[in-house]
Amino acid sequence: MEKTIALSQKQTYTPTRFTEFLWWLSTAEKELLADAVVDRNRHKIIGMTVLPTWAFTTLAWTYFFSTVATNTWLAIPLGFFISFIILTIDRALIKGINKFSKNKIMPLLFRGLLAVVIGTFMAQPALLYMFKKEIRLQTSLDNEKKKPLKSEELNNFYKPRKVTLTTEKENLQKDAASKYADVAKARESFLAETDGSGGTGKMGIMAVAIAKRNEYQKLDGEYQQFLSKQATKLTAVETRLKTIEETIKKEEAAFTEYFNDRYLTQIEALNNLIKTNPALQFRYYLLVIILLLIEVMPVIAKKILSSGIYDERVRLREAMEKEMATSNIGKEQELKELYSTLAHQNDQEALTNFFNFTKDDRNEKIKSFSKEWKEGTTQSFGVLWETMKKNILTRQEH
Image 1 (cartoon, one colour):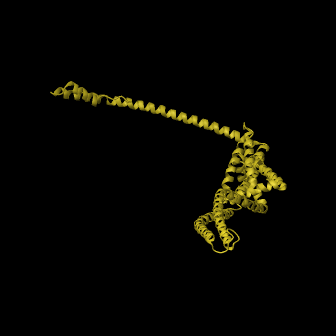
Image 2 (cartoon, helix red, strand yellow; image 1 turned 120 degrees about the vertical axis):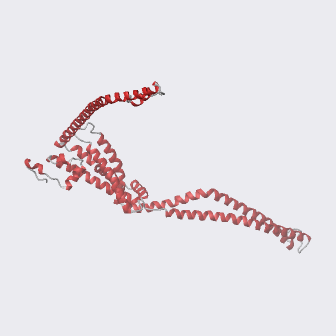
Image 3 (spheres, one colour; image 1 turned 90 degrees about the vertical axis):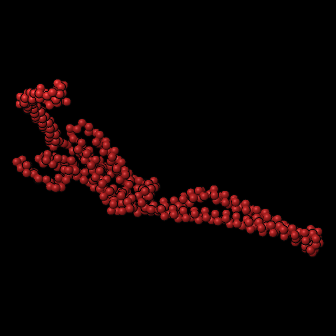
């Protein structure tokens, strides 16, 4: 508890460094607050509500950046930077709330909206930290579920080419089988003719058997030539099919290398856990509500704590400063006007004296020019007049 100071000794109150820091968080003016005993404690309370909000925001953003930044040490300054922005917004809203402000609802609405956005976002890193083991397990399960999906996508992608090549391979095999059937049929006919089981029914190599043998040998030779040609095509088709299968396996292996436990992957796992786990779902919404209260707590504290003499001092001090500024500007304007008036008067006197002092000299100069013209024989009066204008007459100011 703060020690009560006698009235005659209030001018000697000196706040501690930490008290001044809390006053700074509450946007209070130290010079006006030093003599307000009740308001000193009130603004310390407001500062204490801002401090944990700032600390929590710093920790939450630092953890968030640690999950997305490659360099862990980079997350610390980034977390402080974002939290300082939020602290600046809080101080601006708190500064605008007092008993003399006309619009008292807008700061609360704006800070409430900001609290909803920030609280909802910050609940996710907090839950990621609290349920780290469960989320890692869910991440592993999610990654395993992605493998067959990726395999299905690859098979669907390469399916048209595989179907085309498979059809081409089957056609080549059918053509080869058809050719082979003709050769087999000719061979069976030849053998049946030689053993007497078919054809003419006479055993031995007769004319008909020789003819069938020649037909069989001809078809067999054509079949062998056909196989040599088709073998190249069939090998090319099988190579292309094998290449596609190898490509699918390589892409599946490459896909597994992209599996990680970074922020988006953890968020996806967290969403899946929330959908399937009622206990976690309840704690998630409960944590969001708690974080919303933490975020909006400084503005609520400023609003519910009754204002004392400090706000009145601020209003009077601001009014005094406005009045002094108006008075000082008026006095400065008067001084400038007086300077201009006196400068004008002195310039008039200087000009008058200048023309008075040079009047006789100008007349003597005119007489000198006139005498020179009178004694000359070639100079005209017009030339004299031009000389007089150039050397005697005064030009008008523009």
